[in-house]
Length: 387
Image 1 (cartoon, rainbow, N blue to C red):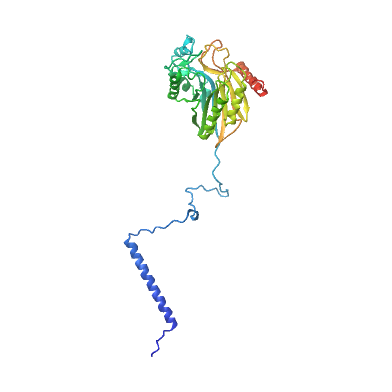
Image 2: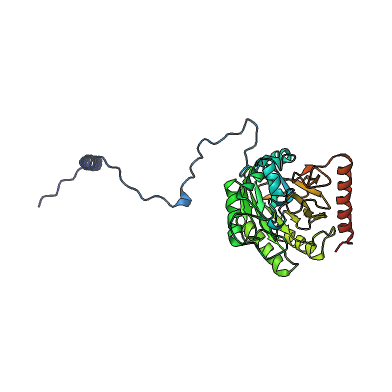
């Protein structure tokens, strides 16, 4: 037998390398042809899990100045200041059984339906703030039947222009005269105010207003008597406003005893309950006279502002009234406590012997007298000698 010839080892290695290189070249050539036949479509790849992918850099990211530290987290919200103004009972009309030449309706006719007449003396104050709120007491309607009561007040729907002309932006209807002409009268009052751009609220109707970018909730409550049920309804509305994202919650309450200068125990309990429930401010009306105020948990409770543009009496015995202002500072959802407040002494009339239905700012000795009267009432509340 013949022995099989053998190749030297280096030659074998060389031949193997040549064969491998030729096979690789053939494979690449075939792959390129396949890609060309498919139009050059990219190959889809399964993405890596999100946790392993690098985060995309933010677009147009602001860079700190040389030497400055990198910002951490979101920028802190900027503080916003806003001023709210509150006035008392606005009865725009009269009782039809007491219509005479000195009534509110007669004054409207005498002024040739000049809506600006009535709030002319305070319009500058109302116009300089961010939100003005009053108590709209009575119905603006030409429908409905008069309620069977001693006093039932009604004015024409166009009387709503008095509020808009005087820079009033909102009005509570939670009081004992808003339904003097039934549901029709109540609905017509809302429609009349809406037509003039005046936001109405009260009972289960909470008004939400955007004031300089701050969400403000206005809650209107009526207390025909001091009761836990009335208080619970009020605090439920405060909670609802907070749940809707309100940054400021204000409660306007109709409460207390008419013509009494001192508050009741029920007023104080309800007012404090409102603050405990999350209200930032409580203001009140109904007694037709000024009552005092207190600072509770860093929040103000102003118990009665008295009458204001009041068509319910041609010559009230006590014409003193108040405008209350508070400037709030809001940073995000935080509202500073005990912010700047202003109690402005006023009279419901420009005359002392009759009602001109044109409230005015008090000056000189009259202002000093009303200021002292208010402070004495506040001192009695602080001393616990009122309720």
